[in-house]
Length: 596
Image 1 (tube, one colour):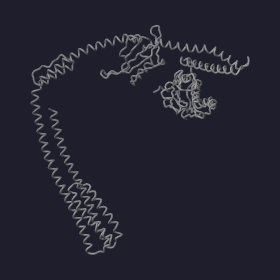
Image 2: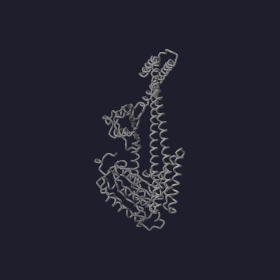
Image 3: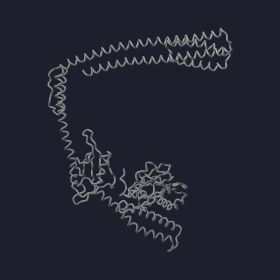
C-alpha cells in the first residue's frame, strides 16, 4: 500500500504546485499590466508634447517646434505600435483603435499647422486643446479597461486557487485515511503467507533448494506458493545439471592442460600464479624460475596486466633461454590478457612456445648463408681480378665486342660482390657478432660529413643536399661507422629515385621521448601506401621500379638501427616524395631512461 500512499501524496503536492503556478500567473498578469500602464503614460507624455509643439508653431515658431513635434509623435506611435502588437486579437485592441483615431485627428491638425502656418486664433487653440483632451480621454478609457481586466483576472485566479487547494487537501486526507485502512485490512490477510514465503526465499538464497513453501489456500497467495515451489524444483534440476557440466568442464580443462606440451601459466591480477600445467611445473623447477619469472618475462607480464593488451611477438628477439635438466631450451612467450566479469577474475595467461628446434634451424640458415657467401667471395675475387687484367689488355688486344662482354662481366661481378658483402654484414648483425663501437658523436658534424661524402653522387645528377639540425640536438651516443652505412644507403636511394635538380633534405630533431629523429626526405615519385610496410624486408623491391638493386640495403639499415636500440620507418605518398627516418636514443644504454 505504500506506493498508493506515496502516489496520493505526490498528486496532492502536484495540485498545490499547480495552484501556486496559477498565483504566479497572476504575477505575470500584474507585470503585463504594469507594462501597459507605462505605455499609457508614455503615450500621454507624447501627446502632451505634440500639443505643446502645435501651440509653439501657432505662435510663429514653426522651425523650432518642428523637431520636437516629430520626436514626440514618434514616441507616441512607437508605444502605440508595441501595444497593438501585444494586444492583437483581444478586446483591448478596440480601445487601442480609439486611441489611434484620437491621436490621428491630433496629428492631422498638427500636420496642417506645420504645412500652412495657421495663425494663432482662439478657434485654432481650442481645436488643438479639444483634440488633446480626446486623446487623453481615450487613454484614460484604455487604462480603466486594463484595470478592470486585471481585477477580473485576479478574482478568477484567486477563487480557482482557493477551491483547488481545498479540494486537493480533502483528497489527500481521504487518500491517507483510505490507504491506512486498506493497509491494516490487507496486512491481516496476507502477513502470515508472506512470512512463510519470505522464510522459503531466504532459505533458497542460502542455497537450500529443498525447502518448500506450505500451500494453505487456493487463492492468489496459494497460487504464488505453488509457483514458488515449482521454481525451486526447476532450480534443483538446473543445479544438478550445472554441477555435472562444471565437473565435466573442469575435467576437460585439466586433461587439456595436462596434455599441452608447452608450459602454460595463469597469472592473477596481483602477479601471483593461479594455475600451471605439468610442463610449467617442470619449468618452474629450473634455476631461472626459482625466484619467480625471469626479468624480461616479469616486465612483459606486468605490462599486459596493466594495459590489458596481448603480447604476441612474431620474431626470436624475445626468446627466453632456460635449462631443463641438462638441456638448454628456448621459449617464445605469448601473453594473453584475460578477464571474466562473472567471476571477477582478471589476469593473464602465458604460453611458452618451445622454439628450440626452430631457433637452431634459424641459426643454421644464417650460418649457411654466411658460410656460402664467404666461400663465394674467394672465387669471385679471382674472377674479378681476371676480368680486370683482361680489360687492361696486358696479355693481348681485345676486339670491341670482347671488351663489351668483359665490361658487362666486370659490372656483374662487382654487383655480385656487393650483394655478398651485404649478406655477410646482415648475417653478422643478425647473429650479434657485429659489436657496436659507440661513442658520443656531434650530430651536426656527423650530418655534414655524410653530405660531403655523398656530394659527388648528387652532383652528377644535378641534385643538392640541405641539412637541417634543430638547436636542441647536440650529441648522440652511437657507432659512427655503422650509422654511416645507414645514411649512405638512405641518401643513395634518395639520389637514385629523385628527379634531376631535386633537393634532398638531411635532418635531425628531437623526438620527444629521449631520442633523436634522423631522416632523409626526397622529392621522388613516392611509394604506394600498401607497399610501405614491406620496404625494410630482405630482398624486397617496390613493384614497377626501374632501378636495379638486391633489396638488402634497407634491411641492413634496419638491423643497425635496431642494434642501437632504436627503430626505423618510412612515410611516403605517391607523387610527394618519401621520408625515411629513424630514432636513436640520445644517452648511453646504462643511463637511458626506460621508454614509456
